[in-house]
Length: 295
Ligand code: AMP
Image 1 (spheres, rainbow, N blue to C red):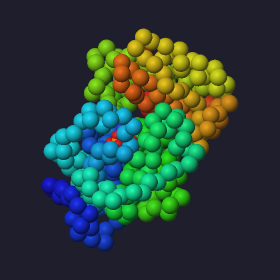
Image 2: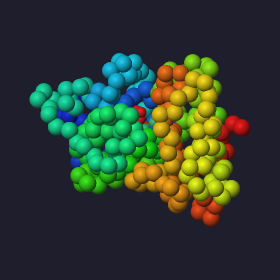
Image 3: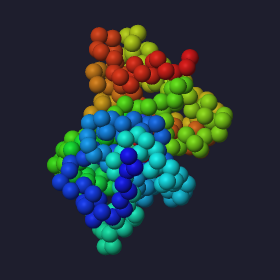
């Protein structure tokens, strides 16, 4: 069935009527990671709405915004294929009408890591997600664990502002060699694509060290950093944190998450995984990674 494509608030409301759909917010450049969110939503909601909007306010770097890949026709086809019933592809003024002068700031959880490296980024994300959830009134909204801090910021925002529906976090989809799918991967040269495997390898190193009983953060982080110590790879941050507050942990404990951001040949990549110590049950991301990272 061909999905409808709507562009304005009025068309969206007319298409949805009283329905509370599943919502998958995206910035387009759809890949198998996005498709997994859409398929999950389609299996749990009818209809499923996919929004495609490259949100300028979450880019702190103009160049990054200008270089963001845009191919609406291809994105519509991919979203349909994955199970979307309705595509919401607003233009700038539909999201930010003339005179728009409001922003949503989430506190502590948005300030460290990505927030520190990309000033204003989470303000842009929180503002656009608030607008989208209010416009669509979804029963469930789907976000990827790939952007783990974003997911925690959105959970905080959703709870604090009593936004509609529930937030569903979905596991990171990876290439067979372990690299997390990202629209930015297309910018990597062949050599940098190979170097980028240092990120999943660093995670794997920590998963294995934790599984063999190491609990000291300092040592776990040092092991990960040595996996990333390659020419052309510059670590922005690497931290073992509490999976909800994202505060640094002195020792591994239940619910820990490893967060990594690194520049690989001029392209900024992020990755993360649940890190479990023996005795606890291993998180799905870590387990998936263990079986998929090429040795
Ligand atoms: P974006 O278009 O980059 O804003 O991403 C839209 C949604 O897709 C966000 O919730 C992302 O976390 C999610 N996403 C991006 N890459 C992946 C991936 N590799 N696996 C799962 N979800 C992803």
